[in-house]
Image 1 (cartoon, rainbow, N blue to C red):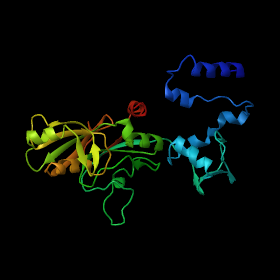
Image 2: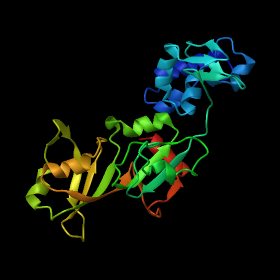
Image 3: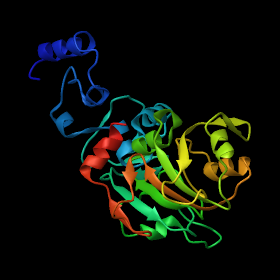
Image 4: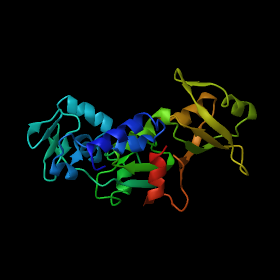
Length: 276
């Protein structure tokens, strides 16, 4: 926009005439300052700078800024909307940070690896498998227990990671469970009703026998992120899971991804995740 008058009209249209404007557009739309400086065009909002560094989401960054966790060039900044210029030194709780290019890596996890950044007991971690996937520091989104195989996403995009792990977004997770004995139909039906695990209701979106296989093989779809929840669901009705494989996560699949290997997400896959 070339004038403050046009900018004002644009804001009025956003509030009045187009109430259904997409949230992403509203978030990315930036009003020009009342007295713009030439350097503003090259700057980046401080909350976005922090989010790009992989620490947290933009909304969380606003809270940290407000509470005095951030300095720029040694000066405490609590101003919302402050812009960081090229060459500025930004510190978060005293640690120098820098914005990174976002990375998204999908791993087909093998068993006997734990989902943690490191382990003081010397056990193998998933980070060893993606050590060469990105020069940026990436983190696992959620977790799979040591013996569970299948899809695990890594990223330095803190905002997306939070979105994918929050139950309200109903991120799809489909597992293939192999049980210690055939699952009786009456027990399968129990999983289609209300299931209470450790005093809390578990929402099971779908459950069925795996087509063409023994009735020890069961597919179960959930969106809960609770630790070992699939194993606990079957233990609740008297079965033991001997193998567990996550075959779908947030509509991502294992197609052409062998066990123990990783790949970067395509641009379209990243867009699809951001639109969830």
